[in-house]
Image (cartoon, rainbow, N blue to C red; front, side):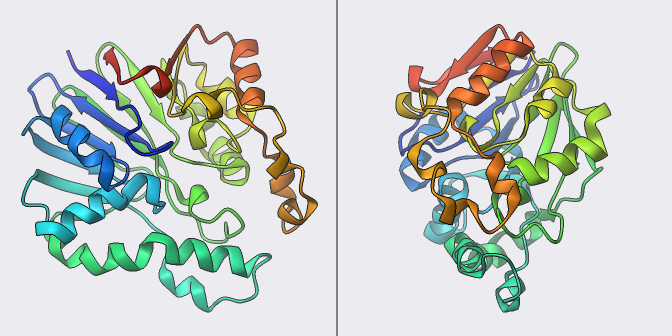
Length: 285
């Protein structure tokens, strides 16, 4: 039987998961920031990492991976394949987007550093396409969503890889940091594939996909990468009341705080909530 570990924050609201398969291989999802690497190493425990999946290029998800490559080319890890699909940096030349300043900041946050170290693991890199399936021991990984052109207003979050890990006993849907606009596309294209026993709450539970996505998933258990303040965030926090922030695109009008998402999950009948504010969570798969 496989085990899933949702690692608690060493750095604020990061996202890091380790799956240990029945044959004692590891699957890593994101990993967090440099400060989170010691905890990640503890749970990987020297195992072969058959898949290191980087959901999207934000600092709380991939700068730990980048730092390990910068340090020694990832020599401290036994990595098989690195899966990712990030927006092209060439988007920086497109000034005709609703919020260019925001998009440019998104492109510059992690992509230059990532592409600088990419040659160090090029032989292990795999740009992942929607529809791909990977089998690792008892875990089947189905990639259900990858970067779509044109989603610029919430660029990096909406480029998140969405994938489902299925074992003979359980299934877990990982939504990365997907927002409402990409969530609409995921729902239209793949709602018949979303059902899972467990769901990782998109974007730490706030400013995320719509309720209809979670209804299609129908999960009994939720994974919240959230410290206490975020898990108990009000439905419409102050930063989501600012018209200037919401103005560039109507999809931003559908961004809500974590309390709204928690209300959705109560309505949908989710029974178990695993939250990183309570420490590292261990779940049998």
